[in-house]
Structure formats: structure tokens, C-alpha cells
Length: 402
Image (cartoon, rainbow, N blue to C red):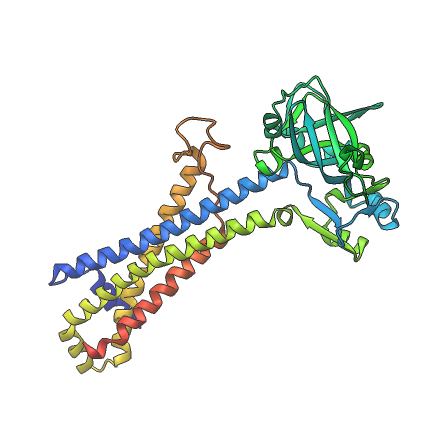
């Protein structure tokens, strides 16, 4: 094995009689390096965007959301719900009521999602960091009900952050058909006043659709006395999802932040996978260059092969010489490409050279986010080695036909 490695290294670095072989070998190394570098960078950028999306949703989504498995409502007097509220694994217990309602603001109206939350909703997640304005995050005071609408929703309704006239809120009564003679009689009506605050989590799904109100207001207008459509909880350091599932038992659907936004993250995973496959095609082209380089080298070294055969080398040992040279090209290109990719990713993390817009504030972030994961690096290395190994084996298997 030592002499095979010595000869393969000599063939790799020695000057060939035909300069084209040197050029093709160099192109092969550069091709593998570029493909490896592209894989590292592209997959790291996708990781960065996934992390960014997760941070944005954190401002609105709870750590765990519990809903009834049958899609109806939860009885807050249920023994399991009461036990959950008193559990030492739960730091913050917040009942919520969500439903669609019609909001009328002077001449503008829109169907929105009204989300009623308990008074401790500000302790649930990072919603305080998403609030804008001069008001207080208080949703009810005596008999007055306040609301915190999404910033985009305010713009659509033509409202300032602090509006003088209250919003008229309509929700259909349970079990009643719309009375065409008097449609308003088929709806529950109430009013919401401006709190002086709006929220913005930079997601149209929330900013243009949701209005936060008190839990009592939502229960009254949706006719859900002492009931909730869901429970949002924040766990203690000793708490876990498994403990909550064991406490509640069957009949409940428990989702973490990623599962609450399953569709978004699934789309991002598919995009990342498609990009990975496209980059594999680039790597395949680079491996074809390796096959060409090895084939040309085996043709040039025919006399050396005859000499080695006369000295007692087997056909397998001779193929191994050229295979080792091909693997050196693969590993050399992979290591160079991975190193360059890592350096570029780190520079982007520290300095943000590649920006997302010409001016600051054009997007949520100014520069492309990058997060390097060990799992992705191992996947890239495994892919490069697998493609390279197959191409080298294919090229050396054809030695007898040359």
C-alpha cells in the first residue's frame, strides 16, 4: 500500500508530458472546491433564514400551544386544565380565545382574527418587544375594553395608533341563521377602544390579521363563558413537553413553536433540499472532470503500467494507484472548498458584507443571515466523497479497455 500511495502522489504532482492533463486535473480540483464551497454557503444561508423566521415568530407564538383534539373548545373548569395551571412545570399559564370577527372603523371594515388573552399575556413570549406606541399593555380597565391591533391592520383600516372612536366588533351568534330582514340582530356587537399600542412581528399573517383583546371580551362576544379555544404556556427550566403530555393525557393537541408554523418551515426545508440537489449536479460535472483526468493519465502511463505488471503488481494494485490519485483530488478540493466556505460564512456573520438592500431598513435585516451547522458540513463532506468515490471507481474500472 505504501508504494501505491507513493506512486499516486508522484503522478498527481509530477509534470505530465501533455499539458492538457495538468489543466484538466486543476479544473477538477477547482470544480470540486467550488461545488463544496457553494454547498456550505447555500445551506448555511438557509439555516440563517430559518433562525430568523423562528425569532420573528417567537414574538407572537407561545413556547407550547394546547388545543382540543376535536377542534372545539376547552372547559377551563376541567380538572386536567386546573392541574396544568397549578403544575410546577408551567411558569406562565395563559388561556386564549381566537375567532373571526368583523371590525368596523368609520367607513372601513375588515374580517379579522380576534385573539382574547389573559392579563399575563406579556409574560408569555417576546410580545413586549413587538409593541409600538405610548400606551400601556392593559387590555381592560373596569368596564372599558382596549385592544392592540397589528400595525398593517391599522393601515388597512386607515387608523392611527391612537384612534378616538372605538372599533365596532361583530361576531355571529351561535346556532342562529342570518336574519336577512335585520342582519345585525344575528350578530353579537361590542366595542374596543385604542390602547395607544400596536404590534408588529414583521409577518403579514399576524400584523394584518390579528387584534389582541382581553380574554373576557372574547369570551363574551364568541359566547364561550369559562371556556377557551386554546392554552398557551411557558415552561419552567424543569418542565418539558413530555411532562405536559403525560399530565393532560389524550384529547389534546400540543404544538411547539416549530409545529405551530409547520407549513412555513416545511417550505423552507423543501427549498433547502432542492438547492442541495441542484448543487449536486454541479458536483457531478466536477466529478466528470476527475474521470477525464484519470482516463488521460492512465493512457499516458501505459508504459509505467507495463513495467509495474512485469515487476509483479496485480491489476487491482495498479487500479488502486490511479484510484488514490483521484481520491486525493476529491479530498483536496473538498477541504479547500469547505475551508473557503467556512471563512466566507464567518466573515458574513461578523461583517455582513453581502447586504439585502441598497439602504438600511429596506428589509427586516440588513445583511443575509448565516448559520453554520455541523450536520450540514458532514452532509456536504459525505456527498462529495460519495460522488468522488463513484466517479473514481468508474474511471479505474475502465483501465483494461484503454
